[in-house]
Length: 487
Image (cartoon, rainbow, N blue to C red; front, side):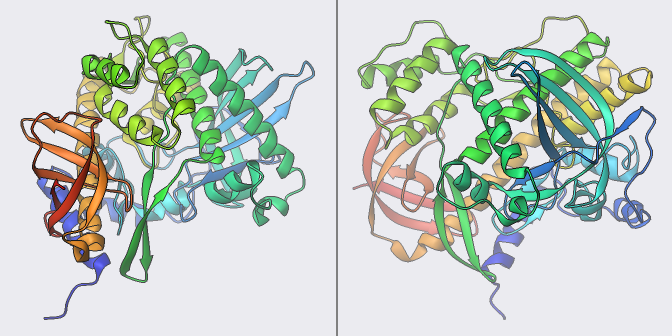
């Protein structure tokens, strides 16, 4: 029997994991047929639209991303303020509620990203082409506009439909390196007159927005994500991918845009689907970590105090701050979707230190964002809400459940990929940090290569954040098991 390639093996593992967790890896025939019948991107929509194709829009995403959800552009104002516009792909114009494509999207609720293959929420003909804000193509979009003063105050905002054109398809790594002074202006940006100043202006606004959020207690983390490096279909290595300036730029603009959308819907008397992170589930352990670091936190959960503690630790020990970040994120607990009826007190997001936060900027990849878009478009067109409160409650629960399932699938396949890479190193020792401790087991993370596994012996008395030396004793690629003991 022919041995499977690494990519094929990881794809098989991902498909099985998705089905075990209630996700459908295959696009239904009816959804594919609906996509196949579309020969061009949507050109008309019910709400009024502006022609903004002349602006210097650009996208910044991963190097290989084709499912482009948003563009951004900035315009200086006479008083030193800057108007920033975020254009979000108008997926609803092509995918009507209740159609086969929509039904599949509502089932999975998210694209699933695994090392070997992406399982898109929408058929690829749509997400990477007809509903993508593709390079140098005219597309319908929902634009979120904000005016930001030099001090970071949001003085005006608007939401409206528009026709846009992506002038430069850019990537995080190259833009981030250029912004940080470590690389040349990427060629697609250099080919567009004025794009360099566009990027600098957007970066300045993003940094200002971030500073203000941190002043209000937003938590700043440094996380190291694994990058899986393939040579053809063979997985060669897993290396650490650090955050960069361009990712921060997009993150901060999207947080601001999502807040505007939430407030827009509330002002129009519409409900919204909010992304919520409540008070930390294990504040006691976060306080214990602070004590171990020679610091202190109050008895009750306080986002401002936690933000200041993290900043002190980042300055004092930058080399180990990614581990602390990962630990605190784990202890904060997972987020969930919640319905905010019009006029009600919004539930808020603990980690972002914001009260108004609705996922709305990635409708090609996340179903909550498509729901938000339909609500916005209905408000703009003068229609009633396309969803009842009861419908939204059910969708919020479904999106929370399926997003959690997708994250578990992604984590499981990453573990199988890690097992593939590390299986030749049985017996080797590594420095590690405890990332999970419960009756179900104790888990540790190794920094080089960036992998996580279970501690099978010597776990007594350990808790999240503890450091130790471990020995690799067993791996199981198919099940994604990586087993350590204390060294």
